[in-house]
Image 1 (cartoon, rainbow, N blue to C red):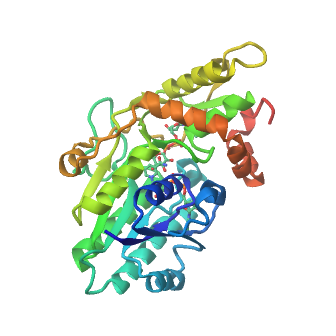
Image 2: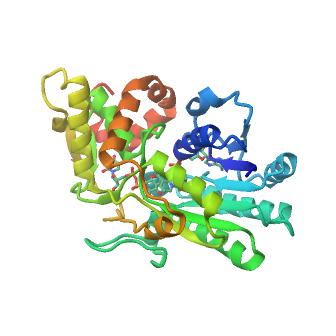
Length: 358
Ligand code: NAD
Ligand code: DAU
């Protein structure tokens, strides 16, 4: 089926992977990418599709009501895939304001524009709100998040995402807006900004810098290769039931320390040890814990499997291998996203363990 899709935040990590996937796999879809190009948005990530006839980029803010309305009317938007967000937990601790603005007000602005533009004619329309498993809070050593798990967000980031989920769900119940919500676990893969654990550690491994592990390194995340997440989103747009939430995850629970050690070993194997002859594990440095650090996330993705037939295609080993190879082959992408503001952020966050070549 033809679709004219407003993708918000398409220059970010998951959005850019999603646009690459859709332009290759859905020739009937037109993609309008609305992105403010914050520090996390990079046109470099979509350079190879910039001139694609089914793709159009608009620089702008999802909180700009007039711009959003003009895009709906001007392009005849019938589908929204809403990625745009402030997405980094650590930044939400040092500066929550922008999270409230973009994640809550921005989502509200998009919902209002869709409600107005689709009024009385929304049968084929879809509004997919991309959310996170962090809205469910933190697990003990057992159990999984299901779609019935009560919301219990514990950081400004997850609280702002929870608020936006509630708004999206309210627009389904109150106005009949065709809303779908996905709650996904930690993604990894190409084009991820090096503030998040995996690309930050990979970058530091390559530069011989210390590898910061928060607390005891025992916090658990459930890792999913980004391509699998993007395929699940396409599936939910095409087959999901409006008003429903779908949890997305890969049953790949790992302690942070395990992930960091694996990355060290993979980089050693692919490019050789450090110039000193030491293995990269020697770079691991335990640092102060993140305030309110959620201990464990783990997704039960049985519903999306049962109802929509989606399961991940990449094992953790395959996904990590593809990811490390991508970062090794795309060091210029990494350089291009690490401008002065990244360096400033890094100094502020990790100043006391900068080390290496920094
Ligand atoms: P990201 O930080 O890499 O990208 C966010 C993008 O949104 C950037 O391109 C940025 O420029 C854009 N943006 C920010 N504020 C904007 C605004 N006001 N107007 C327009 N554009 C704006 O994020 P990501 O990791 O790709 O995450 C995408 C979505 O998926 C987010 O909603 C996040 O909550 C959710 N999610 C992420 C993960 C993960 O592991 N990364 C897991 C589950 C869910
Ligand atoms: O669960 C989904 C969420 O996953 C998404 O909603 C978020 O947008 C995304 O950023 C991610 O959140 P996390 O906080 O889990 O991801 P991050 O990569 O920041 O951290 C992963 C784990 O690694 C976490 O337990 C904190 C730890 N960590 C992180 C960094 C950046 C470290 O130990 N050292 C670090 O330097």
